[in-house]
Length: 369
Ligand SMILES: [Zn+2]
Ligand SMILES: [Zn+2]
Ligand SMILES: [Zn+2]
Image (cartoon, rainbow, N blue to C red; front, side, top):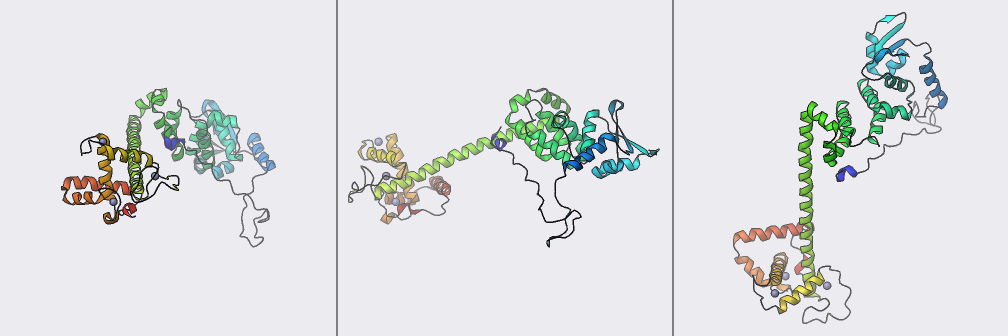
């Protein structure tokens, strides 16, 4: 996956825990706190009661018809409270001998059973969730049961997604309006595009949803371009930063002296502290070469040419040539004044870019002694 996809998905915040003394069973005001229905987790006994109510169908009044003639007994008041959509269905359903009947089709009987059980007790077995998670996601979306939807999303997100099923789950996530899951799938597709595009799911989607395929391909190109652009910018920044450091080291050599090179009027070799400039050593060699090279003319030796450029750059960054110890600083300032406009723009741009990498807005301290 691309860098953004490797990010660890944050765990959901913990459910608020009950504060031991804040309210009694009836939620009456105690200890000066406002009335509350409490957040206490349901006790096992209570949960068992709801589970038994579902399993035994005591005083049930609804038949839920499923595919292949399956029937689940349930209670209209519980279904109606747990799902506004089922409440609407029950309103329309005709009553016969105190029994009403609704249908949930398109998913296996066992999946509907897991779904209805969740409506009673918010419970499910892990194996059942794993087996029917995609059906349960659809059911929770269609019948508007957000807690179950979240549980399905989490199951899918944490360990269920594979190269082979990501396209199917992506389409399902879009269909069921689960933005977070859609995004997780989408990132996985983009960062594993080659293997994903070879799966059966991709081929089917290409046929059934060509628009979606096109969208993915377009964003793939965008993502690659963005990545390339980011790399280019970061490399560019590195170069400007190195140039800035070279400029600092140049002033340091000409002002303080370092190792074997420095101003003629200063005894810089005694008590030399370790140099803090990484580019100082390279610069020292460059200056040494520059001082002794016979081809020391612009456009001559490539090493000297580099030195000329560094000196000119220094001059352009230098705040005050009159007190600067860097050789030719003043000469370049003079030359710059006479320079043609085209070159001037090129140099100015470079100076601005170097200063920006260090977040400096005006010409820096380079010339100060
Ligand atoms: Zn140094
Ligand atoms: Zn040279
Ligand atoms: Zn200078």
